[in-house]
Length: 339
Image (cartoon, rainbow, N blue to C red; front, side, top):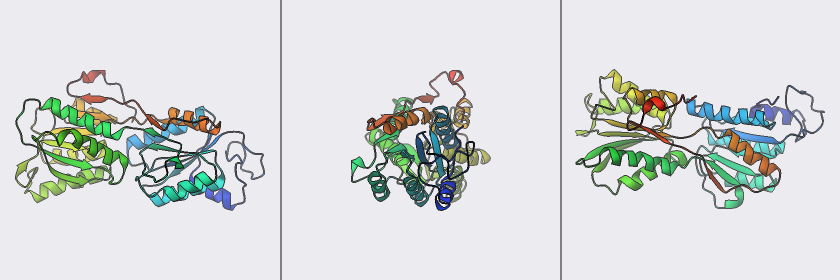
């Protein structure tokens, strides 16, 4: 059975004198002298475990690897790019067959990706995109279309406020600045709403995709405005948050202060991810719309890994299927999310 090994353990194996490409499954043997593994070896670097969405995304990849007999070397970067770069270099030294990683930010990957290319190890970029001066540094991208997620959020608001007069004051809670997930969602959101003069952006802040930062942002707004949820005397009509964790953190503070949101209130809430707690809040009328960001990437990632290991090309761009859940839908028909 496949075991999931952290990058730190891989480093120990390297320093202990294990030669590259040997099986490291503890179920088979811990010996450094066993014969070369015949299985595909995938080195995967995850950005962290900051949310239920991310935990599900990780499980999806682990389970798909085990199901398909792919040896998985797993690293949790704990939200630090330097940890990811170290993990990728460990995978290169170990001479894995394929590297896949979820980049915490878009820039700063060229050097380590050149090292992978020089070692003839193909790389898959997952979930978030990167900027690179050399397109051939990675084989392909699989994940969300973050700009379309932002556009879907904007389309919901345009439908909800069809015929309404402005101004409609929006606060936006960004994720990690420099990440394609946050930057893309904000870009897609503005692409449609900036052309509609009724919508006015009165506040923007980064919450780093963390519930705790969502709470801090809400508390800061209330403190700066004498306990009122407004910006410089202007009422807040719309909250757009680029992930559920930040949304739920913010709403918990507003609840504590007796401030209602969602259906039947004057504050519309739009969130992205569609984890179970956000769907529950949608059903409870506290959130108006949730844009799905699909974490179920494992099967498709492993499929691409097997193709690359066989020397076959993969698509340059693969977007996963996603949907929208809103107050306009039959909410009772939404199936359990699993995360």
